[in-house]
Amino acid sequence: MSWIESYSFGKIVIDAVTYREDVILLDKEVRSGWWRKEGHILSLEDLKVVMEYEPELLIIGTGSSGMMTVPKELVEKLDFTLEHHPTKKACERYNEELKRETRLAGAFHLTC
Image (cartoon, rainbow, N blue to C red):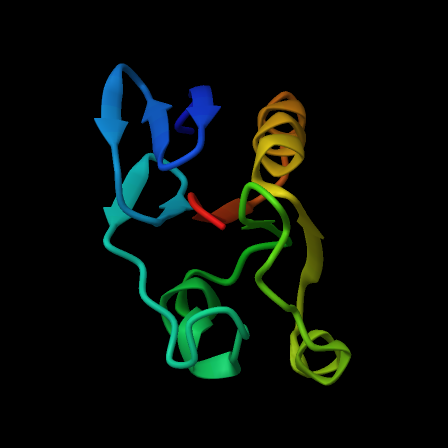
């Protein structure tokens, strides 16, 4: 699993690699350049790659100030647990969950 070393506005360091675009983490795979259909409103379409991965838990980083919205009706459509927090807290939660044997995914908005 990929370890998040640090996060600051617009920048995340994962396994010694710096990313400046939003990312999705699927086990050891990092997918940089994650874009959402409606920018700051998360949709089912935005999570297609995550759904194919079939995690037990997805942790969403909603941005530095938590500006990205995760609609309640979206959460209800998912077959896995979803947590969402401002990105700094989401990174901490992601690293905490790495210690467990959970099939884990993360999606992190780095700005806003």
